[in-house]
Length: 199
Image (cartoon, rainbow, N blue to C red; front, side, top):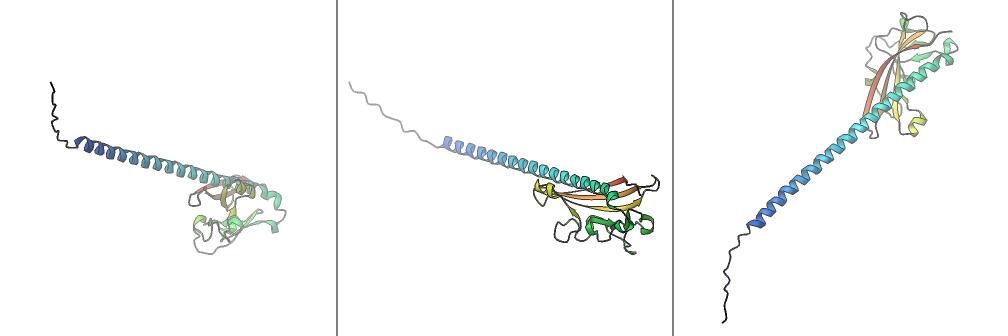
């Protein structure tokens, strides 16, 4: 006896395929969003690290300026050797705003008379901290530059600190440091009281 089985045609609507495609699109969006978030976090972390590097370089400039100031008593043997603090910050030595030469001049330094005009802050003066030819600020030492440490600094002379006693001087140091990316910079300013006893 022969039995014939008849297959019953089934109508397929493709709903499972449609559902899988929707799930794949959702997963793809989640993967792209996660990758963008990770990329943003990586860039933020790199920028923060570079800013910290620029800040460290600026602080190196402060230390270099303090070392330079401490070496001056040995360099100044007579009144002709006195350091000149100029309006244009020549050699990184700046005349400070509102400091009268008659009050500030000493055996250590001479302050240039800049006239009645108000001097801007040192970091706003022409060509200062631009790191180009003719920039009067003092660059990083060759040893530091060899180790990718990049900074520039200027020193303002604020005059003798008469309240503290003979041979005590006040200075303002402004230092700018660069990160590994030249567009990343940091600036630090510090007032220093230095005991540089006159002969």
